[in-house]
Length: 281
Ligand SMILES: [Zn+2]
Image (cartoon, helix red, strand yellow):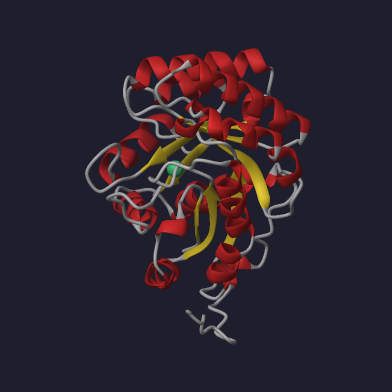
């Protein structure tokens, strides 16, 4: 089984996680830029972080046989801080880089005017750079937030097939299915979707445009949730081809629109243990 986690924050995970992910079948990941917990106070903090997502993290992943790409953006939460918004001026030169396969995550957190400005500006940047977009939906008031998200996407004129709307649930999946956008589901240990509910949605909506991720970060989360969904799918009567479609071919098709996705040999890749000892300190 080959697994592509289309949304995971490896920056906050250990090398042991990479090992366990590889053993479970994960061969590729996309790491979107996000809020690190500690608020950033200047643009330079974003740039060092972007460089880590383009340099250090792919290097670390490769040592465990996992292909790593990233999505870059000003995240919704920090779009509210005027000290951070200036990173929008730096993004264009970063979006040209090879490892960047999307703009993201963008969207709403508290649905403020500042968030909306950053969201719209970054949808425009995605179009200028011919990149797909990963859109985060708010955890509070999710239905209204998702509806408004789809309005902004429509108004921006970006083709719906180039937009992934993430963190969906039973209440929001229908409107995103109708919009033509890709549907993302974050599977968490105790909130949002769990594997059984996910498989119920796959039965109801089919496997087309459906993406499953662990969204694992520094919070309570589990990078093996993608594998768990695959196992529950098989137990529920889905075939191996359905699993491969949802957990490999769909993310390849979505991020492949960037023209920069390099996963051709990743599904057979073993850990590259040549010189794998990362020196600390
Ligand atoms: Zn995230």
